[in-house]
Length: 375
Image 1: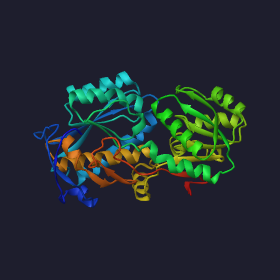
Image 2: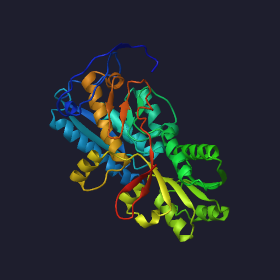
Image 3: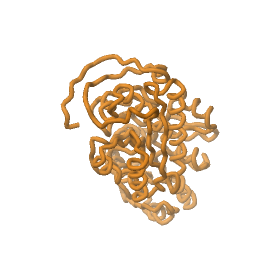
């Protein structure tokens, strides 16, 4: 991070809920952003799309944040200090996101900020975090969709490259596919996925015959899918923000090619997408562990999607960081390495935006219930 540091390897004993996790951490002796240790609580600011298109994803993330905070506080908090969430609505809007972020810093004087769930409402916050020297951690923004750099910005989002093997598996199990069309979301996130889909397709000898993109959350995708139908490819590679809406257009247009898409579990669990609509669909995702699924469903009665697991891990990362270095969240984070919901979360490697390197897998939707990994 542009700062030399003395590494002192040691085992850290962590209290309460953290000790239960059985996590081994690495410690460093360094200095960074100061935390107000005179307060009886640790204030975690949250910039969230409580309203607007991100609201359904955000609700799952909020539930997971609250669950993790409850667990840690029940175990005595961090060094005896309780965690408190201070939440502001970004309205799924970049300008509102920036305003909410400023309020958390200037009025609420939070110790660290979590947010937001999507790249286009998170990217404007990175320069503010850098100027104000306040740590900002996104639970879900992926590496290739980040615009800007700061030693104060981190993300637990999975890497786009972590999807490569799942894409390869799709083409391997559907070796008859020779041509494909792409329906993409027109932002950094969508374009990054289009790039990796193109790269793996070329590697597998599949020709991309066309690409249609949109960035309209209100779109029904009929125009774009109509153009793709005319291209008459063997497969559809789908990186749209709402794959269930795109698949509705696919069904209405009586399209039949095989589909590779992202995060169908979100569509089924969040928006009640009929499982029958996924009969020609393979999807890429990071699925939470059975233990986390059971715990989340027991508390909230719903299946935990990707947003839930990453948000849960964010709170534990913050708690570990402040356990290691109560005075400095930024330096404490540089010491954190632990087993998260679906893999190792490793801040100690010295890279703010690739702390989550777990690999995605390829799945099919079961018509009755659940999801089956495709190998």
